[in-house]
Structures are given as C-alpha cells and as structure tokens.
Image: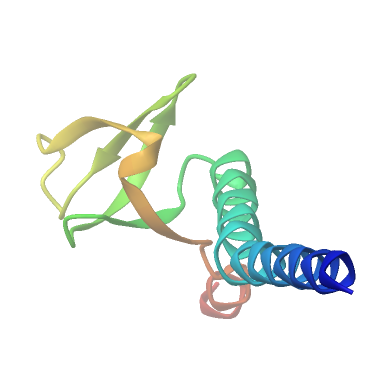
Length: 104
C-alpha cells in the first residue's frame, strides 16, 4: 500500500515536470525560434535600394551589402553613409515599384 502511494506521487511529479517543460517550450523557446527564422529571412532578402529602419530609430536606404555588414545612406546627404552590422536593422521596406511605374 505504501509502495503504491510512493509510485503514484513520483509519477504525478513526473507528469507535472513534463507539462511544465512543455509549457516553457511553447511559451518561450518556440516563439523565439520563429522570430529568429523571420529575422534571418529578412536579412537574406535585403538588397541595395531597400529602405530600412535601424534599431536606433533611423531611416535609411541600403547602398551596399557585404557578408554581415550593410552600408546605409541616411537622409538626402550623400556624405552620410554609415557601415553597420545586419543585426542593427530592425525592419526592411521594399521600394514600391507600382508607384514608380505610375509616375513615369
């Protein structure tokens, strides 16, 4: 009788640990993997001419892309070109090609 209650409490503790680990996985680990995958897709789709928003809040246009470095031009001043890490890019906006076609 005592052995059955000990096994029952140990198995219940094991069930709770599995449930807790599953909850942690689905609440933290899985969403972070999805965000990382989305960031990697964004970085791989970047190309020259795209408008970007940096982590510090500056808007600019990509001039050149190297392995893990991006040269971004800020404002209308062509002398303001700054090299930065790809990880410093928070968002990328592709140029709207339909607008330019309508303007011509």
